[in-house]
Amino acid sequence: MTFTPRQSIRAGLDHPESRLDPIIAARLADHLNGLPWTTILVELDRARGKPPRHYNTSDIQPQLRMLTERLGRLGFPFDEGVHPARLVSTLGSELRIVRNSEKHNDDLTAIDAWRAHDTCVRLLEHFGDTHGAKAAAHMRHAAIAAVVAESGLDLRSATGQADQAAQVPAHGSRADDSAMEQDPDAEPELVEPDASVLEREASDDTPLIGHQRMSFEPWIPVVVGDVDVLDHIARKANKERVRAVAQEIVEYEGPVHLDRLAQLIAASFGVQKLHAKRQQKITYQVKQMGLQIDGDKFVWPADIDPENWVEFRPNTSEVRRDFVHVSPVEIANAMRFLQRHTPGLDGSERRAAALRTFGRKRQTKNFAAHLKKASALVNR
Image 1 (cartoon, one colour):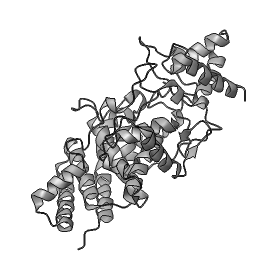
Image 2 (cartoon, rainbow, N blue to C red):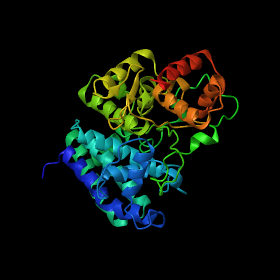
Image 3 (spheres, rainbow, N blue to C red):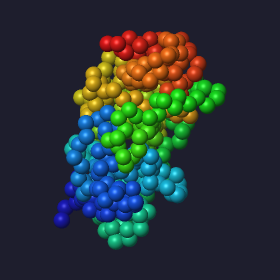
Image 4 (cartoon, helix red, strand yellow):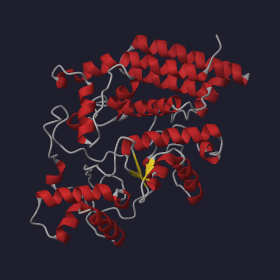
C-alpha cells in the first residue's frame, strides 16, 4: 500500500482520539459530579465570554484543549507532578498544530508524519497506555520507512534526518524564555490585580471550574521547526507551517497583538530575536489568513466578536506581556467592571487600578496613551 503523509497523519490523529477519552474522564472523575468532561470546556467558553458549543468526547480537538489549557480552578491536572514541567501540554500543543495543518490541507511530508506519530507515542506512553503507544509506534515506523524510500538513505541515516528536521531533542519541548523580547518596562516589584477583578459577576454558570475570572494565560512557544522555515517563508510548505502555528496562538491567546504574535511564531522556529524584515514577512502571512485584525493591530479568534466581548483577563507583573499588547477593548472592559464595583474611585485612581489589573504600576508615556485609547471606548 502506498504511503501518503496526509493519510498517515490523519490516522495518527484518529488513534489518540480513540484512546484519550477514558484517560481524561478517569483523571477528572472526582471533579465532574457524573457529568461528561466536555462540560468543563463549555464552562471555559462561558468564562471567556465565548458562545458555548457542543463538544464530543471522542473528538481530538476538545481532547487536546483539555490537555493544553488551564481548566479554571483545576489548573493543569494532566501536568501535575510531570517532569519536565508541562510535558503533557507541550505534546498536546504540538498535536494541535499538526491538526491545524491537516485540517487546512497543508502540504505534509513523511517527516511530518514521523513527527506526529512520535508525539503520539510519547503522550500515550506518559499516560501508561502501552497498547496505544505500541500501535502509534507502528505508524511511526511506517513513516520512517517512507523517509527511507524517499531519500534513498539507510534506516539509521533516515532516522537521523527525521530527528534533525523535527528539532530533536527540542522536538516536543518549549522554546527558551529568551526567545521572547525582554520587557523594557518590567516592574521592579510584584504587581498584582485588585482582588475585586479576580472574581466573575456571573459565576453560577461555571460550578466545575470555579468562580474566578480567567487570567491571561500566555502561549508558551513549542519548537516545531528550525529557522530555515522562516528563511524560506515564501515556499508554500513553509507558509503553511507558519500559518498553522499562528492559528494555534490566536485560538489560545487572542486577542493578541500582531507584533507579539509574530514574536511567538518566530520563537516556535528557533528565532530568539526578530528583526524588522523577518517580522514583516511573518506578519504578511498572518494577514493572508483571513483572521479578524482590528485597527489597533489585534488579532481575534473567530469565536469572539470584538464589538460584544465583555470579558478581560487579569495578570500579575510576572506574566510577560507588554501593556501595549493588551487590547484597548480588553482594558475598557476592565474599566467598566471597575466603574461598577468601585464607584468611589476618581479617574486617576481608576486608571491606576486598570494598570494593576494587567500587572502594571508605573504609568509611562506609552502606557498613558494606551489607557487613553481604552478610556475612549468605555462609554462608547
